[in-house]
Image (cartoon, rainbow, N blue to C red):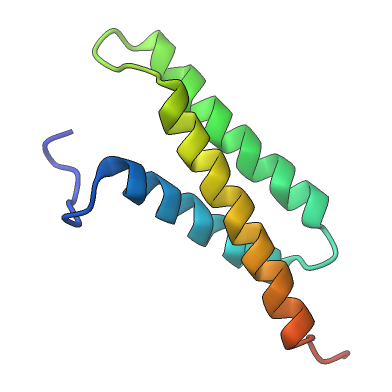
Length: 91
């Protein structure tokens, strides 16, 4: 973990921002698959925390999972808002 890049922000903010960005980009990339995007991002958030239960030196915390899920939800919401403000051109 010492090799992890540091932004200077708190880990909770970093988790939130990472999942916000992930969900936002996926929502823009797959605008007709919103439910699938949300499910994949949520599964990633839950899965990453669950996998930490298998490693003795790591600790899975509900607050960490909550920040990831919240970031993913906000990112999807921002993506949907962006798509409504600037609809993609039909090919």
